[in-house]
Image 1 (cartoon, rainbow, N blue to C red):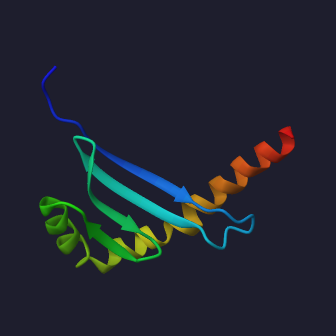
Image 2: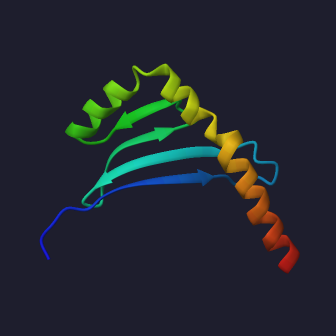
Length: 92
């Protein structure tokens, strides 16, 4: 079938048990190609395509948006990682 595929994905990436290296990623993709991604370590959006660079430049002007995205490490990632990790530890 012909058509377009656009989606947004949020990820929390970490490797330490104290979550000190937790990174929040929010990626916007079109037809399986990542156009733009927010990375909490970098603290801003980065464009990977011509269109994504335009989005990143625009979104990076909005300091309130960037602060809200940075806050997702503590508000979203760590609480969910704690729940997930405890479920795994309880099963072993």
